[in-house]
Image: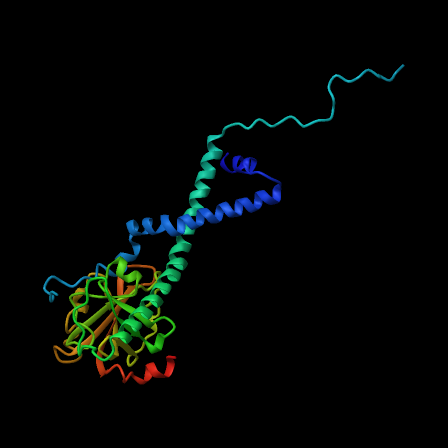
Length: 63
Length: 243
């Protein structure tokens, strides 16, 4: 399926194929880490609820 | 003549018959699911490791920028800093007891996602460092530099030092409490009126999420101001371990 297709279509001998696979994987991980995950995280907002919901009550001082 | 010498019609050598690649929905689905599983695992790695890397780098850059900004304007430093803009880093925090985690961490105005990625977050409604009232600060327990990861290891008497453009403010921690996420009273100007201090005293509240990896509760530490010094007179705890 996807991965056998990828393996067949990578050029060169086995060694080169392996290196190309690693390079491709690194590119994908970089794209996920730098672009995709930050956006996903801002929508999930696990972290925001860690502290954000502890808001000053309405009666508290205002700035 | 028992041996057949006629040329064979079908040569035995040559490539073996190619296996027919048949499309299989199950195999495709399996590969997609495995791929998604790996991506989810990578997301966890990103959250627990990479966000620390980027936030720590940001803490350091912001700290250096603030220090040089203060250095440049030294001499005409105000007596008390003015209300910072939302999102502005306006102070640095030092906690000697957990100095690996909190040593020059920027204090950023605001406590939503973006601010807590860049430091610990000061509640805009709360008092400023040294001011009468409660200097209330939130920080991540895990991920994004996790400044307050070891908040549960702090002990009463431990110091929290806040450096601003105008001076150093040394707070001493009094007691901790675990509260529900909705208990906003911990941020009020005099949160523990029945236990400590007179109303209006300069106090501090630092808090983080609790239990770790959850957002159900808050680990809160209360303290009070013990010392206020000028820029050319940093507290001993800072002098010992800096440089």
